[in-house]
Length: 589
Image (cartoon, rainbow, N blue to C red; front, side):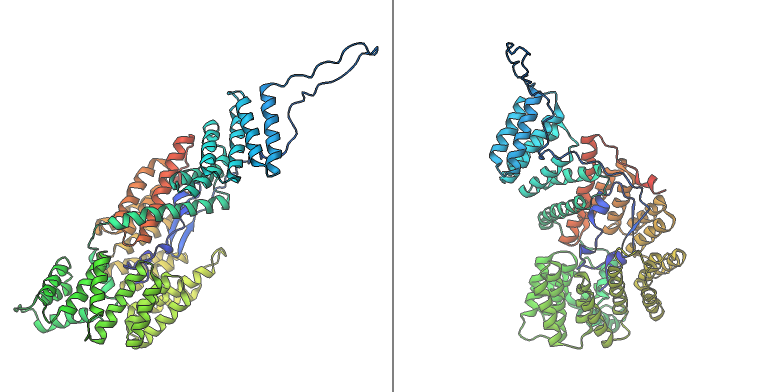
């Protein structure tokens, strides 16, 4: 199985954990970003001064009023004392607020609420900033009493009076997150990030957390309603080629050799095998169903093939039923059983049922310890779970079973690359030469294998060897002209190399012309539109929505919803606060 779509190879079990950090892409209005191999390439940032925090309204400050009455008697002692000077409404309100602050610090939150309420009722309506402070302080007291509803209501009032009140925004964001009102929470924390110039790590972490929760919530519901869809030929071919011992695929090859171009009176299953060999995938499920309903001799194999196509078409329930029935057969060829276990295990992994998935792989190893496919596909899933040492060990096992199987060599290089990249996070070090050498050896061993060249090209780009990278991308596309994902990465190379956003966009649009089902292309284009500024944000959202409609897993869908929701939040915040979002393309020029 191919390593990861972000590295030129799409797989049905792909995991969105390899996705770009959401706040850095979806929210980073003030941070020019472009994507490259291994994660993110950051353009030089133009720092923005962090907004000053307003004073803490809950500290016990001295009263601003100097309205203490003076009791001064005349020298003769016969003049009566002067009466105390009467406090103005503003002064009375401040006095109540200060009293409330003392109660708050003493943990007497009900009394504090009464004082803040008196302050609100006494303060003149025109003194909006003071009123906003009183409402926010009362919200803080309600927060201590865990009255989320009143926290939100008082923060609403504070923000009506002072829309850029950062403490009220954060308090409302926290309360909305607790209440499950994630869209409002996201808009509030987005506003905070923008007002702070994206310089506060704590705010950014909050944004990432809210985005993740919101994306997961939306994806869980949307994934249930998604429609089955046949992926591109390149996608299916890549998946099928990740097996060396698949009995169905091997049967299709054998049938093609036997018939040698002559048509015969053959069964529905054999016709399905012919379609498989010819990469005519649309009718395979119906042909297998016909074979199964007739209860013919190839029922088990037909069910395995149909389950595979269901899996590729995102019909998970149907795929699981077919794999279960294959595995329930009393008499079953060893390779058929192992293949069904691998595919059911992969389906479990796609559903994030990791224990069940790994159990299937372990069973497959016990049944056929020399089967390369078990180690290769388990290695892939270990990569997705960021278990790089386990992945490398599995892939080394796979290579030991068959030294000429290109996908295992390439995926091992990818696992080593990812491990090295994780160890270099935050260190600003060049890509280790050993990573480049590993990919180069794959290219030398398998010069006609397009994925090897595509990964090598991305590694070269990451190392700053842009001209070499572009040449390798050209060779990869010559070998696989329908590899739209490689074309997307070539577009990103142009951005990394030449900082030319327009050229990158043009190349990626060609990938969509090549394969309209290339979800990754829409995702990257949407992210590039975000960088262009607020005028392109609507288009970015449309592109993210298109990617969502093509996404293959719930986790991938959640990631895409996060990007879309982040863009929507920016638009709403900019409109509500009257903020002009910067044009990142101009900043990056």
